[in-house]
Length: 63
Image 1 (cartoon, rainbow, N blue to C red):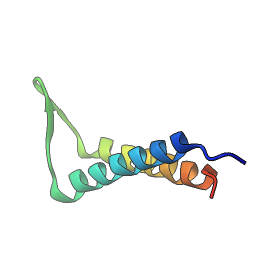
Image 2 (cartoon, rainbow, N blue to C red):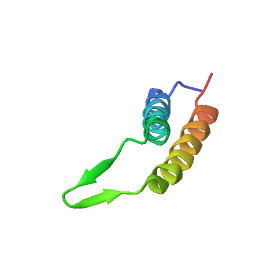
Image 3 (spheres, rainbow, N blue to C red):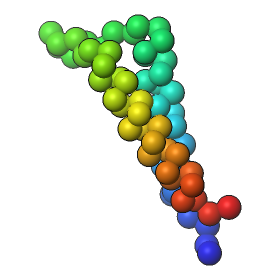
């Protein structure tokens, strides 16, 4: 099977996003868009989604 570098690159990007969401959760960093404050619960959901996608892509990547 040929190597697919896009799969590994996408997995790393999702992993970095998951780490950023984890950082936001543990440091209570606030994200504000205009007059709206994004709640911490959004980061919990995003952490689960991005970590799951990263894990699945790493499993799919050829070794």
